[in-house]
Image (tube, rainbow, N blue to C red; front, side, top):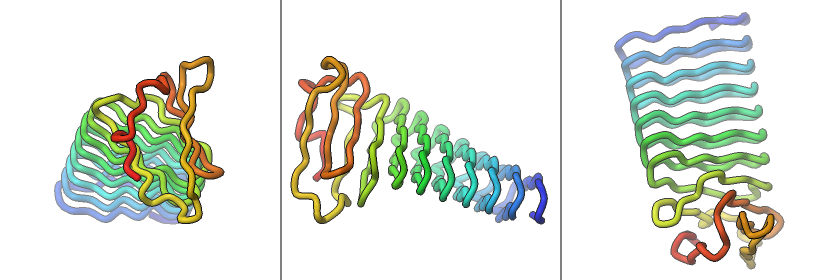
Length: 195
């Protein structure tokens, strides 16, 4: 793309689309594509292949499509939406929304106050380093996992407790936290946590 608001459309092959500084729309197509949004508030759609979508600095909207895609938000307040494949979604520095789809997805929170929804598959929610105060909206017993193996090495205590009148569970990881909405503390088991 150029410096303005661009529309870039890939073909049936493996494409690389670079958005630039404007508010760009990048549509991948059928191949295994690389889409890089750039500095603006961009819209990236992967299409049918196993695609890589990188949002960049703006508040971007990334949608995976049908393949096993990898979506990374960047610095803005981004929204990442998986498709039907087993996708990997990674937030960035902003307050991001990560939404899994039908597949067994891996959702990694960034350093902002993120909101994560796994979707229909057996999903893994990953919290590494200093990740802030995050929310998981649909954690399911017997299907989903919380991965804390990459937590800040200075954290020595992990605590879970019931909050909001017993409706939700709060997991404190040092100064950071994960709120499991509509998941009772009594249903939490140690084998749901990867430590």
